[in-house]
Length: 143
Image 1 (cartoon, one colour):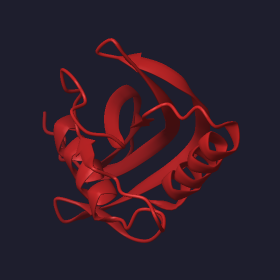
Image 2: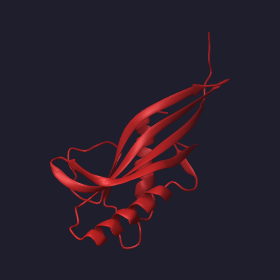
Image 3: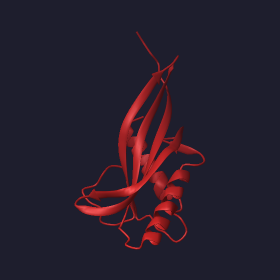
């Protein structure tokens, strides 16, 4: 299974999960775009991977950073309410069965971070989740 297939499936999953009550996720990008014409938007950034080979199988764990971009909010209480709400949503977005190309995979959010970031010269509030995607493949080794 290719990295892009995994990223596309994660983007589709995020787009299909109901956002928090009173909020709208306007766009999800499987690969970083040149700019963010609408927000809130989620952008996926692939990270490192690890591969374990067993008897006729391969386990791949791909780390993906899921960064949610929002416009800055000057009111401190509102800003943190939004950040906490979106962080809770990201932590649970992959609860339940996840399939990619018909294969069951495990997607686990292992960490979240609240902060700020600049994307295409625009400042944003961000919620970032680190997700580990575990894919099991059957492989046939031949001599």
